Image (cartoon, rainbow, N blue to C red; front, side):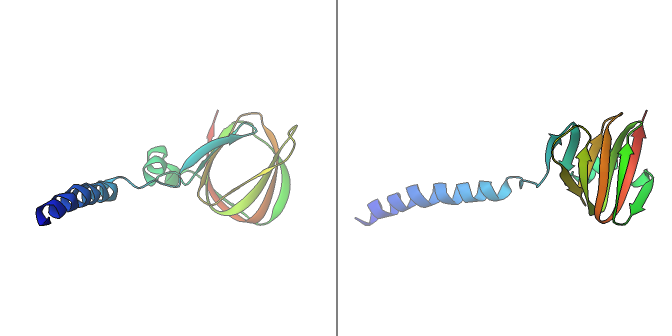
Length: 129
């Protein structure tokens, strides 16, 4: 009886231990996700490698406190928000969306929006003609 129990134990526990081992070695899922709202591309929490590749740290910086202003993008603008929160309303669209610290955002050339800073913003930005 004991050899049978030992074999059953090995048949159950060895695969279980191996699967736990492989799960521990698998790369962890990140909180990065990319989507589009009213033609604006938003990437939540892009990896540092992407920010480095884009040269974000070398881009000009803009800061602003709570305000609400109309804005027209003369060029495509990519921005990386370091901190803060902004509500964006796109002209001709129903509703709005929010962007904030940790977001990499691309606004297309020619887009008209209302930019409402809800929490003071610090961002890097790059213009593409």
